[in-house]
Length: 424
Image 1 (spheres, one colour):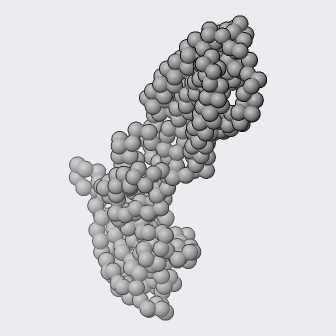
Image 2 (tube, helix red, strand yellow):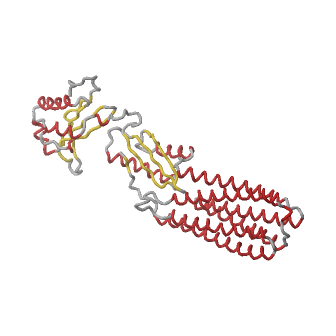
Image 3 (cartoon, one colour):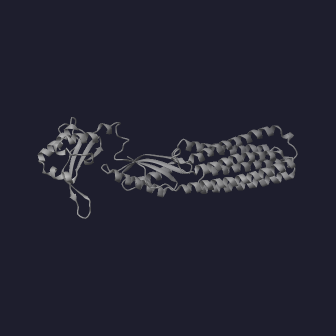
């Protein structure tokens, strides 16, 4: 039995507000980058600092990735729909992956450029002091943007903003390279720029690999860390009504987590009570894990991982029992509502619940003849380990509850095959 808990999910407005906050942060970063790029181009051209102009072009290219972050924030915050029943969190993961590749490309570009400059140091053009001032201003602005974006990403639990923050730091690193290069050129130490570029390029490339790898792990549904799985497991196992737990599976979707789990309850528990236990598990998980997006709780009466394949299908079916029961004179009026079947340990356990309106005729019947008919039912279905008969006498006064009278209850151990003569 799979239970889809009835406890409501977080309101769509919360996810949308988070998406809007991510979008606002990315728009602010875009505005700062655009302003710095324009100033870099103007001062770089005036001061004959073409490295500053190149850094400005790099900054303008970053505006494209900032726009992708904004789009991801809004798309990931959209509520679930018919085409995306689990929400749109993977859009955020996809953009994080793309940003990781961008960081990797930028880092490799710095490494390549550093090698080229080491071979052509004597051709570097003369640079003026205003270029150094602008490079330092850009460096400070980009570093400040890194810290701000990183804090916003941590507060919103948005990996995409954290990736954008590191991208801002890569821009600060490129501005550092420009500042060192300009300062070294002015001081006569031109080799400092390519060496710094190589160091920063390696750092950026390694960050890009880390972000891309983390996004890929999420896209292929990698499970949560063992510590988190242990906390989830402990919460489920300690829920009242849960006797055992198996087949727990976890995965991430952006900042949210998804859980599938099989819980084992008492073998003869009713469907409604089993569903209530599943609802309780879901409520406890939501209370202890605020970033839990959904949990699918499958309710088992026994550990289905150890059950032989096809075992349940080989046991007596309700349709067969109803047909054979109606063939008996005392149970000609039997309906499916009379029958409760329990499939335990490869055997079938049958409970017959006779309604009050049929009770008089059944109680008036000859007891030996009645048991003989039920024993005939047992003979037709050798997998029946026991048969219990209950008769409703009347509702209890003032409660409206049904009072059942058990006129026969005889649990017998599973007979060795062949089991055609098991007694009632």
